Length: 181
Ligand SMILES: [Zn+2]
Ligand SMILES: [Zn+2]
Image (cartoon, rainbow, N blue to C red; front, top):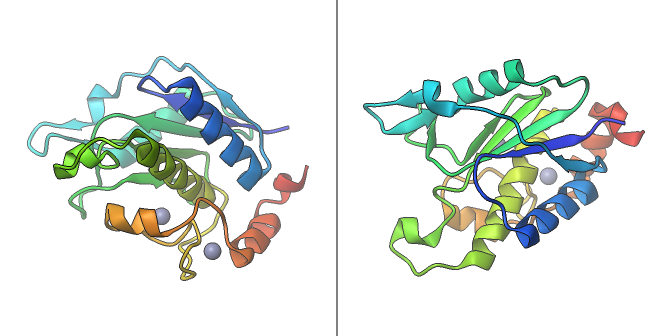
């Protein structure tokens, strides 16, 4: 059975990992598994922008891994961008193998606010399920509250849940036929 292989390029606390894995398994029905992949992201660093090019990282992850039908979800501590945007919280291959999420702008400290570890975990879980949804072929959803609702600002992440809405769940079961295994 295919799995979601979670590749953290930062230290994930056990509680965070448990919370994330449970959410992945509940939402996608695929088992989640920790994978320690030796992966140096430096090639994707843009000196002028002081950020990492997320599309290049996705390609690197895809080439580096032995995927079969598995999905790879990388979680990184640094800031991500794609050329047309100032930053991205994450990116994924639509109906493809790889997703990446950055924790950099999920921390309140980035906005000059006091730390809130519990809030960061919830934001991280939402962004991970969101990007994984794209790897299963789902696009953005207009339903408020759906995890696939697009978020430009961190406050918008807080307004949605970590769950797929009924429409997306139905589409997920159709597009990802291997989901039902
Ligand atoms: Zn998205
Ligand atoms: Zn939806």
